[in-house]
Image 1 (cartoon, rainbow, N blue to C red):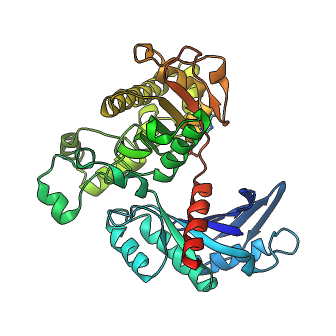
Image 2 (image 1 turned 90 degrees about the vertical axis):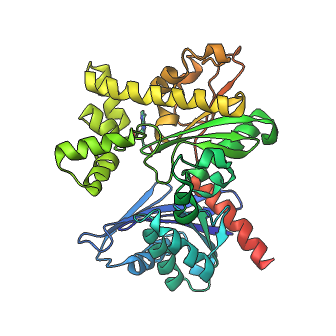
Length: 400
Ligand code: AMP
């Protein structure tokens, strides 16, 4: 069976067609500028790259063009839409309603709508993708896979903030966590790689990309994670500040004459690596600049390294020890410098890198020294594959 994975943004739609027999990607594409002049679709099939520019006013037109590209006589991979057995959608916020992936029916759509209050930029966009693909593929079963679901196993002591309880009971303000699909995938891969039952492992997963979060995975279950009600909390990110003193906002707003929306915009879009370095949100640029002696770039890296180290120490405390630390996503998979800085001086906890093995980029590898008690691993994440596997399983069950 072939499964189509869709990740819809407000003006974009990413897709990937996966053959579930081999678990290989058959085609992937990106549609940009939906509803904006200059809409275009780019599709990659192996070495073949196909690009079309044409007006796409909404997600329905974009979905039609996605299918047209997949069925294109020269650049496509499908003869008919019927070859797509199911569609798996990435949905950012499942709130407390979704503890796992779900078949998309009217109730599911309603619950995603209800959770839009927590992810006002993402859930409505995800829903546009769901509704558009349902319009153009009305008979194809669809599944929603949530970034938050994996973290629903967190105990109350990890997910509650120190607010008056009423904010949780009435407003559902709590830590939800994100990147759950990635934390789940790499922790399962780690157990498999180590030849151990995940139930016996305490793993700290470090998903470090444009957005970054860490998770404490005890016995295969997320017991704590660094992102919160929104993906702003936690370590320093590309343009996001990560955790700050909440009262500092009042101070800054009073001095700068900003309202709360402007302030949160600064925290989300003008802070992080970009804000501190004053150069770029891209880790490669910041590492290059720091290597050439740029002090602000160096302090941005130092804040990031230090923040990650603090979470690793904290999560080892939460789980009463740690058996493996996993680095994943763009930075985690590709920056030996960051991994070295993060893991150094952790020998007192039995954690030591092998500098030679740590040179790897983007491949699954054990980078710990032979005498390291804690395994340190690089594991490329593959969120699309998790979405595809969940989709196959749920659709199989529903047709079962
Ligand atoms: P992601 O959000 O997972 O795509 O990750 C994007 C981040 O990974 C960006 O900050 C990139 O600069 C970073 N990244 C990608 N390749 C490298 C690399 N070779 N070295 C350092 N950072 C990298």
